[in-house]
Structure formats: structure tokens, C-alpha cells
Image (cartoon, rainbow, N blue to C red; front, top):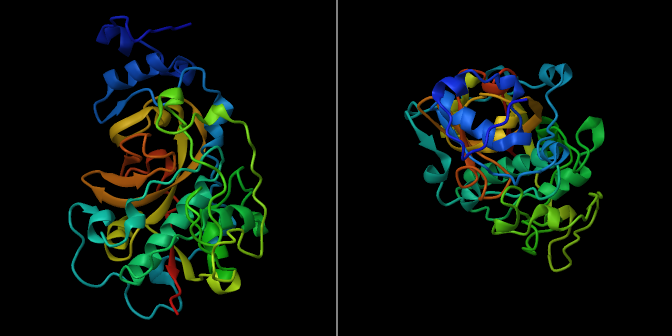
Amino acid sequence: MFTLLASTPVSAREVMSVDPETLSLKNQDAMIDYINRVQSSWTAGKNFPDGVSESYLKQLAVAHRKSEEDLSRSPVWNESKDKVEEPYSGADPPAEFDARKKWSNCASISHIYDQGNCGSCWAVCSAAVITDRICITTNGAFKDTISAWDIASCCVENKCGEGCNGGSPFKAFEHYVKIGLVTGGDFGTNKGCMPYEIKGCSHHMGKNGKYPDCHSYNETVVPKCLTKCPNTNYKIAFTKDKHFGKRVYTVKPADLKKELFTLGPVVMAFEVFEDFYLYKTGIYHHTTGKSMGWHAVRIVGYGDGYWLATNSWNPEWGDHGTFKIKSFANECSSEENGFDATEPKIS
């Protein structure tokens, strides 16, 4: 069995002779050393404490992959029957783009969410994209936050989701169109109708993080669908607080730059491997480690050879909560089924 300590000098020949199939997060130092020596596109480092369980890491990434049925009923923009005009009008998108800069009046785009000790990445990134797009569409007038907890709690029909045990961003957008969503800020903010009910925690820094260690408490909050605002200080009635989407659609990789530049952030689902948990900086591509499941994140920009994404594991993870992933290469199956987007219905 291969064992490598970070403090042990290792030659390039020795590293190259290692069978990457033997590496795992059970020996983070060995995996980090291997990744940083065999490629230079991205840098790996220790994000999670030694001894973190595989089941816990898998729980952080439990998005549902699109089914064949989902794909069959998800139109591409230029195939939409009720299309009025070409959505991508105007100048060609620039070589590099960051939605946080173009729409600086929409603070939500820069916000890094924290799903806490809950497998709700699917709900959090969907709510984030909806929030961003309403703000963009209203030229910054919308300052609220769409409730991720509403999605996690109430998007259960048609195999949409299972609360903290995973769900489908595509179906979350369908829920937004058919049922509507109320507002709700982060845990403890007391903002909106239905704030997030699980506190943020330090997924990856253990006791050295800014936030409480995720393992310092073992509370299990089960999302329950409500028909009134749990935030009693919020003065708008539940039914009056509902926001609705106009449509759900799929964006092809070839059109994603235009989509981001013209209309705003989208959701990306991709297969997560063990090495992703070790990401620090650079353009990520799978280097070693086994599959851990599927994860959903928000894409907010792009550059030379990458998509720029925000994760939902708080700002301490990765590059201040963000990461770059290799573009136009179907990296980790991120592009084969397109990117999920929705258009807000503004009254």
C-alpha cells in the first residue's frame, strides 16, 4: 500500500510511478502531492481535516443528474416555440467576463452561499441564479433573496428533490415557474419570508475555520413545506411574496458565453471526484480520485479556457468560495447535458 507524507522528499520519478488509482482522500497529503507534481493547471491543498468521513463529503454533493425525460422537455433557447426575438442581440461577448463586475448593483451575484450541514447544493445554486436574474432583469431594483429553503422544503413533486438529501436544479426551476417561490435570506439574517434554516459551518477548516466546525453539532433539520412565512417579523403575506418564472431552458456550451454576458448566471451540474475537494486555485480538471457523486453550482463568468463558478461551501473553500473549471472539454461531464437557466416573470 502506498503511503506518502507531505514532509517526505519525493522525486518526480517516484511520483510519476505512483498508480493514481491507489490515491484517495484517506491520505490527503499523498493525493495533494501527486496532483501538484503531475500537472500545473490547478493547485491542490488541504481543505478538509484529516479523518473526514467519505459519507459526509458525499453529502455535500448530491445533485440529481438530468434524466432522459428532463432532457426531452427542456427546450434550448433558439428552439423555444414562443420565442419573440433572438435573445442574444447586441455586441459579441468579450474574451473574459465576470457577471459580478457587469452587474455590480446586484450584490447577490458576489455572495457566496453556505449550504451548511445539508445536501442542498441543488436548491442553493438554483435560488442564487433566480435571485441574480430577477435583480438583473429589474436593473438592480430587486434587493431581496429567493429562498433556497423554500426549494429544499417544497420542491418534492415529480422527483424534484429530497430536501437535504439531494435534488434537481432543472426541476427546481420548473417549480419556480409552476408553483412560485418566496423570499428568504441566509440563516440568522431574519430576512424575507422563509430564511435558510441551517446555520453555516466550517466544512473544511475544522476548528481553525471562521465558522463553527460542521462536526461540532449534530442537529438534523428536516425541511418541511409551509404555506405561511415562518419569519413572523416579515410583513408580506406568503401568497403575496411569491415570485414566478416565465420559462426553463437549456443553454448549449457554444452559447454559454453569450448567455452569461447577456442574461446572467446559470446552473452547472457535474460529476465530483475526490480531487475536487482539494481545489485551491487555478483551472480545475479531474486528475485523480474516484467519483463521489454529482454537484450543482452557479456559473458567473468565463475566461481563457475556463468557466468561473461559485460554490456553496462558504468563502473559506477554494478560491474565496469560487473555482474555475476547464471549458469546452466536457470536464467531469459538465457540458454534455447543457446548463440550466430560467427567465423571470416580472409583473
